[in-house]
Length: 430
Image (cartoon, rainbow, N blue to C red; front, side, top):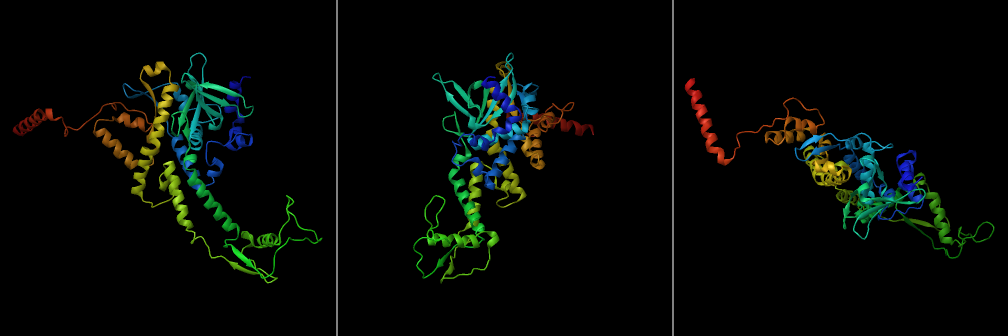
């Protein structure tokens, strides 16, 4: 079996679970290219929520093929892959979710296009984990993709035409930079704060303190047999370290909180006065969430943060579609139009488009007002609106209407005279 056939069987078959990030790292694939690994970053609720929100938003948007000349939808075989079944192992929703998560995590999402050897039309779309793909240019400037088999390590080279490449922020146009890498400092700081808070409660929710004694604690701890106690690495344990360990063994952890301490040898415990309020923990967590949301472009209300009101959330939802989703959708549309449609299709003016209205379906008031405005301007017909709602057209629904209240100035005198003459004539007959 060739590397190509082996990869195809692995990606689309039952072994697809082997492509999980943790499995790849355990198999020797480094989590390079990101300041913070996905596993560590997604332990932060804000990071996990942002990645889930973005990937789910992109995954639920349906695609269609449009005739760029007539601006009408067209039927095309590629729609079965985009909206029905892209490959044996995945639904369209899961494929798009994997791609967008890969774009957030590694800065690059890759769709391997498996083509019919005769017609060259795509027959499968298989998302490949970003860790397994390396784009590069040859001396002639052509782009190629080296895909590494996740089990055997065998490389396979794919041409630019056989890979849909969706990038995050990019400096050179060839390789994307992940959000996790760009937000590395913010995520690391938030992780450190979360680890500090975890340690605080593991110690029983009590501040650290000092054990004081007038006794000399120099020297090494001795066991019952009279021999010096040693750590597993062979180093001797000091009396101070032994005392600290015994104290933490008895009093550290939630299950040991508020236990009564019995001190001897003149020991006295003095707690330190630091607490979460002094450390401004609540404010720190809020700032971290805002910073993370800013990097991902997700509005705070989707993270259950910030002030909540219907009016502001409505505007934020529209802003999210326009500023965050629309740029990503535009890249998907352009890449898929160029690589999933044949040259003959593109010469006919066909384009792949993604329906963003699916993201605003929950906001019926804003959607209805926008449809009404577009119809009154003559920009949309009834069938145009029904198509955006994934509903069938109706007879006569292709007609467009516009108000005569707004007419070209060059025609204003003639139309005004006709209107006045019509009014006088009607008055005389009555």
